[in-house]
Length: 566
Image (cartoon, rainbow, N blue to C red; front, side, top):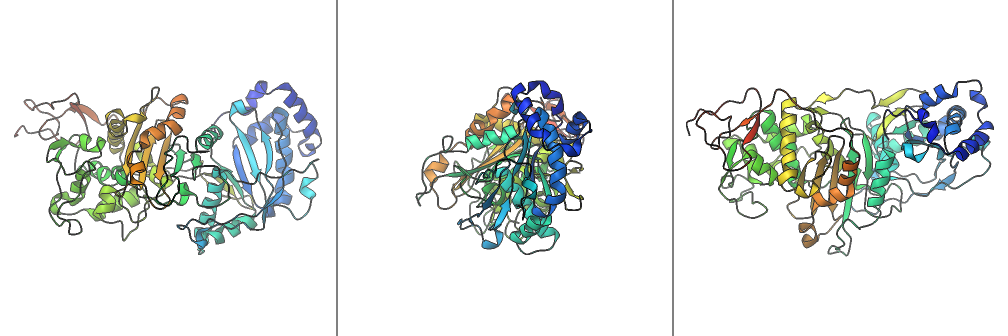
């Protein structure tokens, strides 16, 4: 959905035959808006576009009004189907999902009234979903009854899961299904935030395994993947819950429910983010690539190992550790010279950036330093935690719901008019963004480079090579990719997988072709200066320069100069 476009001004783009057909079709049903200025009606109704999920108790009040208004819109649009069918949705057989978490819609009836579909070139449309009525009153204006498509899109399905969880939590209920029952019977209107072009693009990429490894795991199962795209105010623009043709409703949605270990992709929102925000280290601080002291982690003598083996014992600047995904520095940050700041880093990740971690089992070195979480955040939550690094430090909770209205016409959710919280300082946001950009220009994510727009990001691999993650950020879009196996493993397939390249093939090229913002937010309180090749602090006269082309660092106003005592 392209927010802010005024579609009623695009009437000239509609094929004339569609206009004539729409006028003839609408003439029979637009009596309630007789005499009303149709342009102003269109202008008002087009403020929100893509999907509305409605339940049956609003049908008698909502349908005549919306139907008449939307039929007025059809004067410049292509009317599509009025459909009706009975859905019997199988529950997921995925072992990671309990019966209590499944939303059952058995015997529930939806009447998706695809009220209008404007000229596809405008990239705007609205869908309305409504529970099946007990009589035929609402279908009086339809000449033919059609069957509703049997399968929901991932965007609608994710919205149903989200609203079910919202109503469960709001009403202190036990299960998601309890929340869904309130929604199903409550007469709610649910407007979605998805961008039609993005969702259709992702659907085409995820229809088969063309862009993904074909290798099966030990159980003979194919690799799986999930994807999410959002903007920097938390609007989910596109989502894919699984790879392959979608053949069931409300089964296992990996993007929303799939808790996976993020590997090193966790460190920018745990150890590195905490260190930069709290001035423990700078962009260019020098540290040693070495093990933690013997016995620090779970009695192990040597921990952590890097992916290429034993630490090198070499002195590197922070930006180098970061872009090469060297695992020892995040561990040293949390170790903090023996004072151990696990509680502080955990609080930063979960309270400031709202990363969903287990309060008992994830408050440790393994989860915070190498991403070996007990369960792991889903990719929507993981991407959401990165949001402050692309918008000047603000956090908006990710949601695919734009607005939710109850049966009394009260707006109970409004994600279009909310203030973000300042999760980290603008300085931290800017410096972390530069570190993430380094990953793409010359680090582990170099295959994600784009031609027309800036790209920042991070790769992540779980310790057992079961999961690969990539966070991709452009000035327009924040996205996340997970690739792995639902169960079992195939280390050879995952170890050889390039998550950055898959991200580029799946979405990066699209982002590169749809550029509206040319740069990430700047920060005039961060200075770019030479740094000392020994300490990594701002260089003073006489400080040696680094022996490479990367001689400039980024510094906050209070970062000190090197005293020259090398």
